[in-house]
Image 1 (cartoon, rainbow, N blue to C red):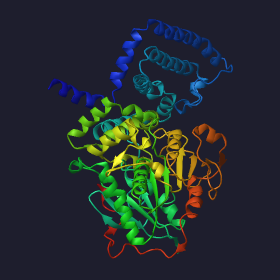
Image 2 (image 1 turned 180 degrees about the vertical axis):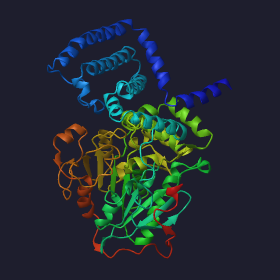
Image 3 (image 1 turned 60 degrees about the horizontal axis):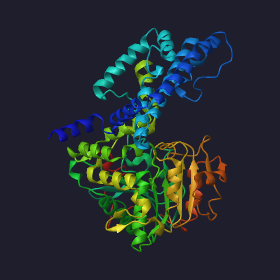
Length: 559
């Protein structure tokens, strides 16, 4: 009983196991006095240099900027004011010292990495920019507004404590409305079961390619990341390029779905959607595009089709998708047995992992950008929240069924069964090498969820030709990637050329790739149209067997 009670408390206080890892590393550091002494010596040397360098700043001598690539310290005061310069240098010394202590307490690589992750989170929290007294931008704003910015910020802080569990509001909730200026592309719901709604979008061209496109979004978020808004919607882009588009909208799980499994997400999700798309369009093949976890599910479905001798899959497009979990990035530190056990405890009461808990975990991986930045802008500068569609979508969190989520973390993240050809779904071991369809694979250069090198590694698992494209942006901006001046891709060859097998080393691939000032959407449109069949009249919206039962965006998106 005591062990169970301790586990429940631990799971709620520290589900990721940061404190346990940090304690273990600290104990190891205590047993390594030489390592601690060396780190302390380096700290003393660096601190001793600060007064001299600050004096150089005071007299206007040239000095190297302390943190030239850190956006938190762009204010000129950190470079030009000797007091702020010294404060920042001291903070950076503290960061280096803590890293040195972690190095001194190194145990196994996993525990050390988790302790370092937690240490960096605490150090980011303690940054001088997060204190109104030591943030020059906050003091300047307070002076110019006669203190009103601090008054507004205090009011925002109280509001967020009361209504948002102490997390700063990042986006204006009244700026976006699903079905109006988000998820607004015209379409009809043509199918619904207990897991998904299937949306068929109205054509935007007089003729469409004979092969329809099925979009598979991640079930960890609402589907409209693929239809974020006019001019930024991938669905809209595909429709404008002569495609017939269907899209899966997953139901937001509740306590009745605790036993829903990966098998259900295949059979009642992607497989069911393919059956409906085929029946409505009469097409012999269906192209699939998947994002993130939706890409993993699409790949699993492709492997299942190939293993069953089912040849309905046309091309497969995957954006920011992890298939080979041997180097899963920061999230790999959250899939060890203890963390999975803690998550099972959290999911036991309701039968699902809450969207708020999951969103907070993801936000803490990029706390400077997604949490602390808004501490400053909202609570200290008194600014109103932004009107940014991606933040509004990100705040519209979803839950994950307990059984499916546990299986996902154990079999894919922890055991890498999909890459090994050992993952079994619907009674069949999935071998991606049997998938001989052409694959279009996108990785994003700044993706912290799916490092582009890991996305690249997934491309080597398929048996068909793979066109790998490295795009600008991060995990989300790398997906919402309409044509624009800042967008670029790196790729080998033209979209209409046959591709060579991907080399094992992604750096070797990149060394011979060519940069182009286009969005991957533009490159994908050329690639996919050449494989999508002849042009013909658009199919009807729905059919006699699967009639229209509602209008987009459907009902599940509001759950």
